[in-house]
Amino acid sequence: MRKADIWVSFLFMLVGITVVVDSVRLGFMWGRTGPASGFFPFYLGVGVIISSLIVFYNALSRYKKEGAGGPLMPPGALKSILWVVIPSTAMVVLTELVGLHIAAALFLAFYMRVVGKIAWVTTILVAIIAPLSLYITFDKLFLIPLPAGLWGGYLLRF
Image (tube, rainbow, N blue to C red; front, side):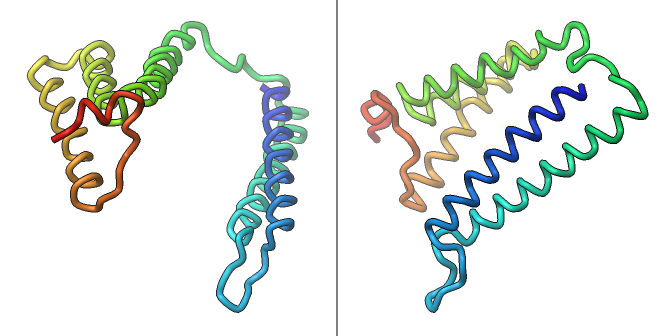
C-alpha cells in the first residue's frame, strides 16, 4: 500500500504542476473584468499539489511505524470492480454511438436487473423515466442538447 500511495501522490503532483504551469501561461490573476482564464484552474492545481504532498508525507511517515500493511485489493475484489468498470465503459462507447439518452436507458436497465437483481417492472420504469426526464429537462426545457451520438439524433426525432 505504501508504494501505491507514493506513486499515486507523485502522479497527482505532476498533474497539479501541469495545471498550475498552464494556468500561469493563461493568466491566473484577477483582472478588470473579473478572473482571468487560469484563475480557477490555478487554485485547483495548487490544491491538488498540497493534497498530494500530504498523502506523500503520510505514506512516508505512517508506514515507517506500521509496516507495509495489507494488500491493495483483498481477494475477490476484482470481480466487484469489473462489475462497475465494464458496464461503465460500455456506456461511454454506447453514448458515442446512440447518444446519452439511449445509453443511459440501457445502462440503467442492465445494472438494475443484472447487478442489482431488481424486478423487471421497476427496472423498465426507471430505465425509461430517468432518460426521458433528462431529455425533457435539458433538450426541451433548457434547450441544452445532450450528446446524441452518431445515430441517436435519428432515433430521438420527436
